[in-house]
Image 1 (tube, chains in turn cyan, green, purple):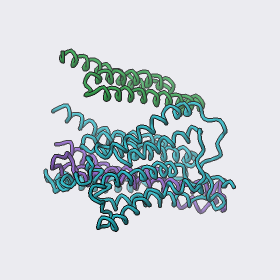
Image 2 (cartoon, rainbow over the protein chains, first blue to last red):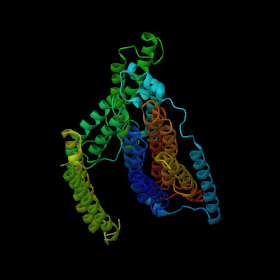
Image 3 (cartoon, one colour):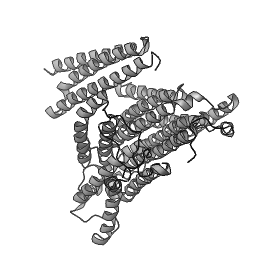
Image 4 (cartoon, rainbow over the protein chains, first blue to last red):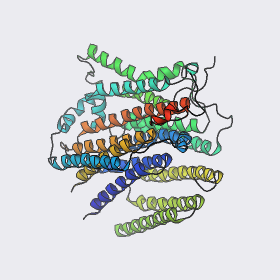
Amino acid sequence: MSVLQALDIGLAFLVFAVAAWTIFAPGAFAATVGYVVYGLLLSLVWIRLFAVDVALTEAAIGSGVTGVLLIGAAARLRAAEAAGSERSLSGPSRLLVAVLCVLVAVALAGVVLLLPDQGPSLAPQSMQHLPETGLGNPVTAVLIAYRAFDTMLEKVVLVLAVVGVWSLAADRYWGGAPGEVRAERPEPTLAFLAQILAPLGILVGIHVFWVGADAPGGAFQGGAILAAMWIIVMMARLTEAPQTNAFWLRLAIVAGPLVFLVAGVAGAIFAGGFFAYPPGLAKPAILFIETFMVLSIAVILPMLVAGPPRREPRQ
Amino acid sequence: MSLVVDLFSIVAIGAGVFFFLAGTVGLLRFPDPLSRLHALTKADNLGLGLVVLGLLPRSESLLAALKLVAIWALVQLAGATAAQLVGRAARRKGTAL
Amino acid sequence: MTSATLAGLVGAALVGLGLYGLIATPQPLRKILAFNLMGSGVFLVFGIVARKGAAAGLQADPVPQSMVITGIVVAFAASALAVALVLRLFEAAGQVTLNPDAWTKPPGDGAQPE
């Protein structure tokens, strides 16, 4: 058995064990911490599958930002958990559910084992048209050039999620800022971390976005890193969450899908098809669209984590 | 020459792995959160530093080597902050976390 | 057994585990956690499909990879909305259980009629 095979088997066992801990842990807080660890281990599995862009996205969004969201929620729901008015499933029902879930897992495992060694693939076509897009990273080309419509709709889903979260506010709080009224002093330990990490993190985020045209990276990963920097500055109370009726905030949230849609329609006018890019101008157009995508993602993710407005709007 | 470099890498990474192991044993065996934090931060920062040291001769360029050192510095920053916060929370709530 | 097959089997096991957690744990927040686990297991099965499509000098087919990236972002958006709903319910009613018996008794303090 080679070293890499041993690594793969060990990683597989570890991922399954941490996932089992997440399901069976005694408290919600412990389960959430287990989920963050699970996400990071999953990124290693994605690297072993040679999908580095997916590994970056899983570490940044799947484990990082989702982890912040869930840990905050678990901490706030501790009182509900202590009240303990839950009714668990009875023993025989639990056994039946376990047997059925094992059946589902076995069926999926059978499908996985029956896959042919070399399946149908769109890789040749992706690589064939890659020079026309001017990009070097085929995954970015698929996201922004070949399947640009999907990515635009995904940005619209993010905007809808923000609208959904904001609409949960009480009527008198509509337009206010999320989060409780903070104390005036910044929290010292987190302020130290934020003041050192945020400038560096912004640089790393922009670099990951920019280099995604030719190497693993891209708009989602870079935008998630920028979002994390704003989240940590807000957690350190160095700045307050903005009011949700602020025009700049709403413009930044909508800018990504709006620029994307305008580019698609402009393609119909100037380049002969919806979301077609004019030849020779493909890479500048793609980078232009991606810049606004990064802005939108960096603003939407912290707003989703901050939650609905909980203070009355000023003025 | 490359044999010396390989040997240095193996020794440094091996020492780093030993410190990670020691930190994990401390996490599992120490009685309360503050001593577990002590084991984690001391052992893991030194462990990661030794692993990075062992990888430095094998990096392709000076920029890659600087990135490795920057990663170690960032992990230390994050680990120190997290240890401070967890320690403060542990002391405030008694020993149960 | 290649690394891709192993990852696919882990994905299948995670789907089963997540499904059990979704059905059997009573607290809503942990149901959201189990749902995320199930989703990442499905993405792993997608990953093995991508790896088996290695061709033309690439190690993995880029189209399933971009679908998984889209899926991770949409799963986060859905989780954020679900968590916001759970927190708002707790804020408005003082409890966040799915147990129907707990709702026929008068709720604890914290209930604010809007």
